Length: 216
Image 1: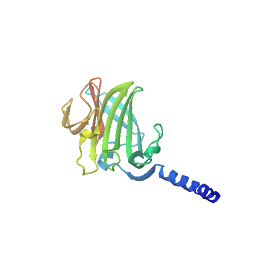
Image 2 (image 1 turned 45 degrees about the horizontal axis):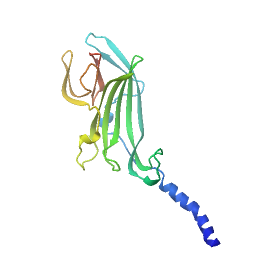
Image 3 (image 1 turned 60 degrees about the horizontal axis):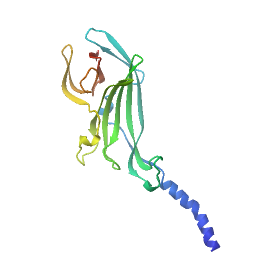
Image 4 (image 1 turned 90 degrees about the horizontal axis):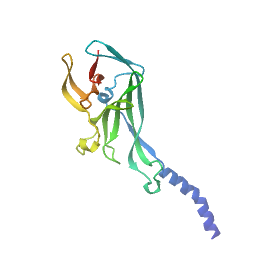
């Protein structure tokens, strides 16, 4: 009996180590944005853009740009029965790329352009690139999200699965004051405050309190 007890005591550290390895999150891969998606933020940190209204007045927007590879997506859950409600989810995960562009109008209005990746279904390696545009001043002034590019063919992509609260609209042609017409424009919902972006320009126009401002 004593010999059995000693054998069990000797094995406990091995069992503990095995459980620890089995119940820790592990990175299993990483995935980068498509060039076409990343191109929606064609700027470096510290750049500025200048917008003009119909009267020729200028508005200079300073910006912060941050690119990271740290977003995590669980593709397989581990140790479900041992994870408490307030503990981090333990899983095999991918890290993915995201690029954030913050633009500032004065001291009170912030525009956020975010290109990121998301999972289409839980516990499956089905990714898509997405775009989010938002403008806020204490509360939200304009907001919208959209899928840029699914990264899989099977199953067929169903955009209703994304559950975006406010979707961006893709306009084949959008006419601005002064008969300036742009093609393939992503925009937020029509209203007194709007944001506009194109794949080759990124954010190139805004509508603020009913007045349009376009990149010169």
